[in-house]
Image (cartoon, rainbow, N blue to C red; front, side, top):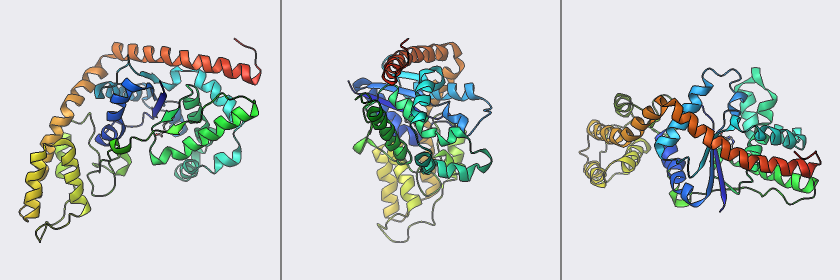
Length: 331
Ligand code: TRP
């Protein structure tokens, strides 16, 4: 069975874009692959060196993963900092990662612009830590968005370099996992681009959102002044509303408002009210489960422990091999 690995930084709640984009696919993938899903809390120190509520944020993501349907018995769900072997591999990989290639990395260049007061070595070596995450389980497939493709490319470079340096064929070259037609992009509520937490206040609907929060955000979504000719092409912000509706509403509902649009009789207020109610219905089972999981600390601890145990077993094997390959004493 092929090994798939995915990491997420604990810097925000999961939204519908995350759900339809990757999470929903993870639920089926956990039956078909050897899956590792982890929370990248070490990575978050590169931007938040003195985190306010690291444990709480980690628990929240864990609860949201479980609420979405990830199964700790099927997949290995763990917290990165629980697997110390990752840190050891990070060190070895750093010895063969060159300043030039790390400095050329787009995400590093972005970050030094965003936080010029804190250009730390962790930021520079973010790609080697990510490579360690992936290579520690010798994962073959990594589902990544566009913004992470360069990091995956660097992981392949580090893997190949390791193999070449030590004259082994040990690390596989991890490939991007493409969801193909199952990759559903969800637009945000502010009229342009995709749903995301960094796309502005009110742009994303979170799985943990309350009905009031959803109503408020949907009613504020951008619209235009309405169609003036029958069957007119929809401007982006209106197409986005229909897109969101197709994701959460019944086909008849979408058809109903589409017909109204095409006959120039649509009232966006009515459409948004309906969209809000359908989103509330869609999100409710998730938000209820999230609440239940978050308040059950013992259970979350148990899940994290189970994940850490499984992840460490695989990681320890890799570290044992790597130490032997490099020439350290076995242990
Ligand atoms: N860098 C990823 C992000 O910002 C998170 C991440 C860390 C990751 N390690 C990983 C993703 C390993 C995939 C594989 O989204």
